[in-house]
Amino acid sequence: MDDDPFVAKGLTRLLRARSLHTKTYGSAQEFLAALPGGVPDCLILDLQMPEMGGLELLQHLTRHAIQIPTIVITAHGDFGVRERCESAGAFAFLLKPVQDTSLFAAIDAASKIARDDSHRP
Image (tube, rainbow, N blue to C red):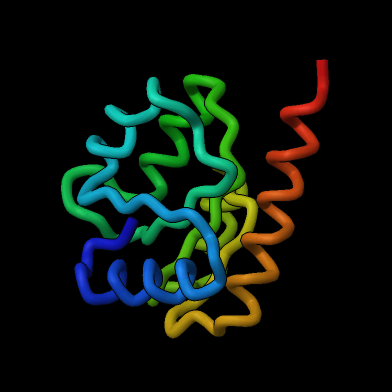
């Protein structure tokens, strides 16, 4: 999720070019409403979103024991922000402009965790 439709579209194209299945959401509320249909292997979100920001979404997921390896992307990457995201359960924290190799490495690691978790009793 990204509040900038051009960034969201660019990320979607990049991920689909690598044959990754993607679904985009216009807001955190839209994403939360879709959760009953299935939890994704990985969530990529921006911190700056209208209504409910990325950090608030992470905290909401944690409070409701919804575990999704989450990659946070942001243009605002001071240490305090990074620390708050990691405390809220972020799997990875990447600064914009996101490097393709860093993003793919984070997605691969997050997806592996999701696959491993799905095989646990």
